[in-house]
Length: 161
Image 1: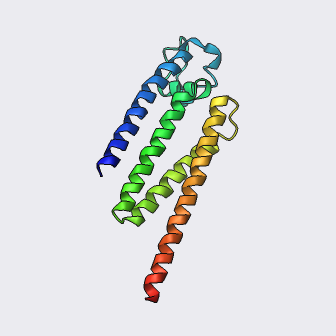
Image 2 (image 1 turned 60 degrees about the vertical axis):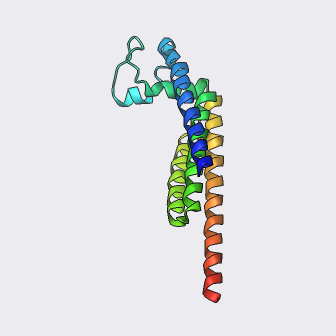
Image 3 (image 1 turned 90 degrees about the horizontal axis):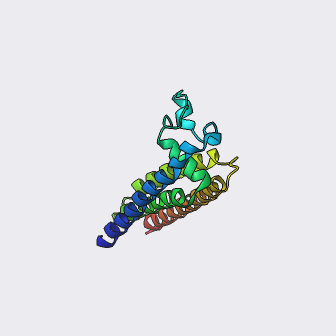
């Protein structure tokens, strides 16, 4: 159990470092007025008029960083997936397969919907995030099918004995 805790702590460390670096890198949108209309969906949804760049909602910094400097936003995504995988593994170790299935389905739906929003990405960062989310979704669905198949095979073996 200790090794899982250490892995979750490492994943959390990478997550938070990546969040702060992405936030810093994305804050350069303040000086790039040509991107204000295209890279500020949260500010636009809140109907905030951008005049000097200081009005931009900080969540938009992550969008800008993901589009133009995607290394740390990708690390954010990968660390979330890694932490989720460790949690699923812990749940399976405690023979809570139903919970592991539910968690896997929720994460697959989240990643799949995120992938769908990135299908028409035009920047390198957007395309890379699309590939990572799509691959992760397919991999999780594959693991889910294998887990369900394994569980049904063991149930059939128990009923025949």
